[in-house]
Image 1 (tube, rainbow, N blue to C red):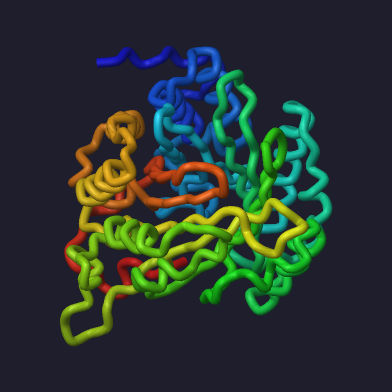
Image 2 (image 1 turned 180 degrees about the vertical axis):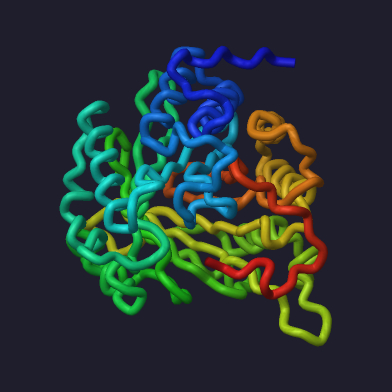
Length: 388
């Protein structure tokens, strides 16, 4: 068994939100092959980004509800797998968690991102250009700002921010996304997006990226595998059959589209209501209306009875793409000591990403479960998995 890294001296106690998540991150950094110095830097960074809620005891409920996770932990992890490389670790944080209302949440998030820009020497110009769109005086919706850190060797992460298109109301979400793309120079990009049920997130790469992206996330309720295969608007791929196969494996469906577990819709009543499948299109070239990247996200926790099933599907996907699944098994034990069969939601999403000029990437999203473990289920009721 691999020895676990020592805790940095300034990480809060293990019985606090910051203490638990920092220790989880330390162990995940080890799985991702980061050295001791980087692990400690990133654990401290996570604690700092959480702000005052980092010191909140875990025997108290979450400071505020958050759309980021099922149990309202304002932290989520993910591991991205590509051939012949260690997985890339990412941590998603809601910096304004615990702030007094959505407006204050957003202001706190902006301050934290700008502090990070000064610390790591990158510009926030693209975010500044969109501030009035996504941070109105009286914002609406489920979030204000999330910040993702892609953890690189050397202790300086790549930074992404996620914004809420419905900040000025759901009815104006499409208009907000179109205007954000226009301001960033992607004047014809909005028309290239596929049909959807709603606009979920608008994301920006900030800092040291080879090709900084503007990304649009869409929700697709009750999607079929064939419909998933037709979503990509990128030039030259991915093949629809590849996306359909990913969808079926992640959702636990057979070739006829029948679900193996809670996805079953047999019976007289209405079928289970799940979180929507998500698509993301990434735009990098302002001279083209076509996106350069496409990702499909399946909320596997709504299609599985327990995390044993979700992990089996994740492993099958990694095997299908010729990727090593041992790091995923290690990541699960780095986050929790519970058996996968004893809950559902530890593995929240599975994703397949395609970016022009790069091999396909499979990503598993892992919940902290700081506050609650969702119990394993049989066939889902309509109330059990209502999409936020």
